[in-house]
Amino acid sequence: MTTPSANVTLPEGVSLRRVAQVLRDAWEVGSHQWTDTPLQLREGRRPAPPAPVPEDAMELFRLLAERRVGYLLVGGLAMLTYVQGRNTKDINLLLSLAALEKMPELEIRDRQDFFMRAQFRSVRVDLLLTTHPLFKTVEERFATKHRFAELEVPATTVEGLIVLKLFALPSLYRQLDWDRVYVYESDIKILLAQFKPRVQPLFELLEPHILASDLKELREIVVEAQQRIARAEHDAGE
Image (cartoon, rainbow, N blue to C red; front, side, top):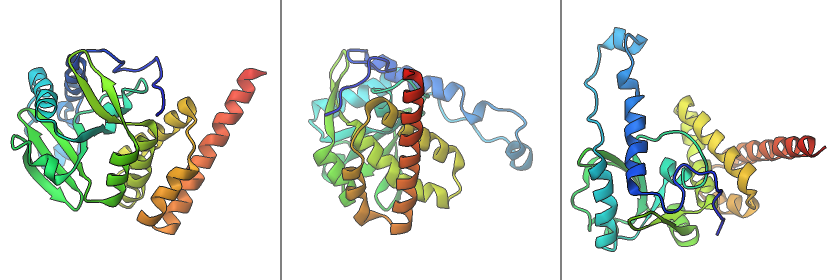
């Protein structure tokens, strides 16, 4: 298990209210606040999503703990337990279908293969399902605990985060979803720089689940990042 950095946005012992504030901050700078964008001028302004209510985010984690739901916190909030970083507008959970049945309050809005988009009151929740064998492996091998003031939250390790972000990148490339591509690549590089995890075992886990050409490209991205990190550290040490 990787030891978290001291410079985190969600450090050990912080209140779950800080999670709620992260979600609120992301909402306040979201694209629905922009005016006269090309998309709005072409298609008209869409209704703004409701602002997340702090008590709703806290209640979600309280119910998960109370009902002993097996899950892992992943995504942007999990990143913020390790590093200082960006806001994130939703909560990402990795869990099984059996675990999901214990949370009927999660209103499923959309499902695509091993992913679900859900709503818990005012809070958006994205779900990764362990029916995908790679997600199941992350659940089994890359789980830790993050202690908040109110309760402990099961969360993924640095290695688990890297695996999930590497797995997502090829799909994001094909969708031309450049905003998320840049965020995910940046997240991976930050984790590599701060924690220096062994990456070869992670690529071995990914190999059965992505195309060989995609795996080759991902290796090149990681190797280049490691080389730049090494050069920067060498120059700083001179």
